[in-house]
Length: 140
Image (tube, rainbow, N blue to C red; front, side):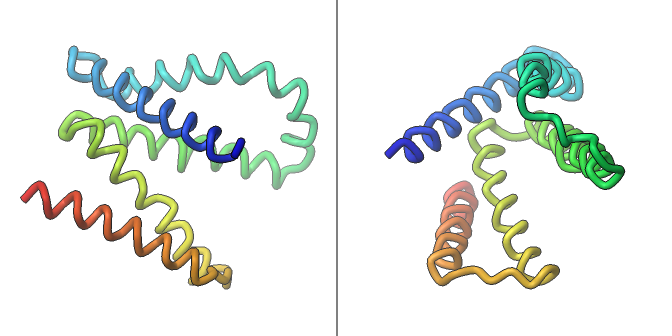
């Protein structure tokens, strides 16, 4: 039950984040500035957690490379692209389209590293794709 509640809370906060970014962009803030300010504030809030959980973060060169890769490619590049998209579509549509991220990641995990997805997982992927298809077909 706690997992469901936390999942709903995460979804709510993501929706608020997307709405807030879209509102800033619609009021004339550059998308890069909107995304940078949101993530900058988030970083300041999370930075103290490194004192409790970041002891191995930079313990090896591999860890350091992974940290920088994650910060630059999926986070910075990905969210700058998300901000660019918010200039052109509604926040609800942009948030819905982000559901493709775990689908692509799961399929790449199967194809690239040989992960195995259970039938329930494939069913979930199918439901996500059906919902996205429904969203796009209803707009036409």
